[in-house]
Length: 531
Image (cartoon, rainbow, N blue to C red):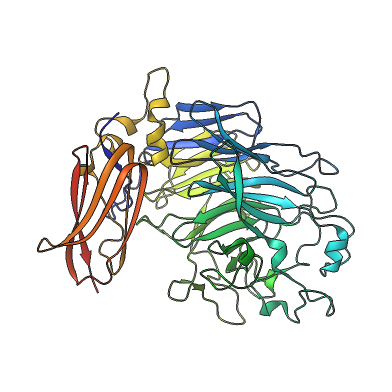
């Protein structure tokens, strides 16, 4: 084991090299397969998780090197057995394939489906919940004749005993409105005055569990933003994406107040189909949409933007990766909107027309070098193709790789989960990635790599690094004359360090961050504080 602190390079001097793929790994599960693959930049298999049950849709790599996945549970609770990307079970799997914990979320009224995302060490699931035709009609739905299954989210916290506990929930059912019945609940006279609510009648009939348009919204993608403490999700049948507040309690999430936003669980922002909330404007998402996510805001191009896989963005046969610069106002914790108008932007901020497209599923990401990663799943020539493209030239510089995957992800060399997996990779001894070369980031000592974001700063700076073995760590900030102005001690620490330091009260000038460990490693880097 190397006595090193491994730095997650979040701000690489704002220098991005286009025209070449980044070194890293792709994680994916082929459609209908029991096996999850991790392949390197040379498209060689670095690691596999071979399980006894089928992965339902998506997988994620935790910072400890464990795999999180949804798998098939008992979906016979539906009258016709038809459930899109059905799961019912979520598991955390160690690198050796052993199950760390497993949680069943399936009964006659609930079942997990499609996507999941990590919230720190917790796991956030998308799930269906049954509402009967009686409940629907009582809530103002126009003549419901069968059950429907709207989406909700559940957050799971591992309990340390092979299971998990639900620690947070949000239900779309709690945030409906209707203008059909003045004497009914959730009545509003004008839908357009309530963009924070979902019109219960905006989607009348779609496919899915139970028949009769049971899969009401078909929420198929979810992502979490730690800095904002917000969740974004995509709805195929609404042709829209939504942002909600995660800082609420479960009780607040069922109401219209509370949390950082003061809006409880109401919709903070929505985009793609203004007619859903009675607004005029161009419908940018004409049909299906998948994999809404934030581009990591660490200095890479378009950091902080939302990005979506717009399945029919260009045409019915040409998909697009659309970037959206949202009107987020940190001072007021709101997404700004001019009354009487749709949420901006009125069109996509950036667009890449996919070389391989897909009618459904699919995913995308933005790499630290500015490249766009695409996983086009099935149909339209996509067939589960993964590739990486230079966002400036449009040149494909990695792939295409026919993975037959619904939703794959790329992880860079210095992601803690990759670091944790190093000793489990390439069991035959043939290493085909440069990530583990002596000159690579993973092999470098702390002195080679420390970076800080943003730098210069007017206030809070973020310092992130990871250690692959237990170490005592000291973080100090000193001013230009050597006076210590900040210190923090981390005893017997292993894994990710995410240190956010507010220096807004410091005098303007140059400061130095010093990191030392009991293993003899040390590094010093400058921070410029501006007013």
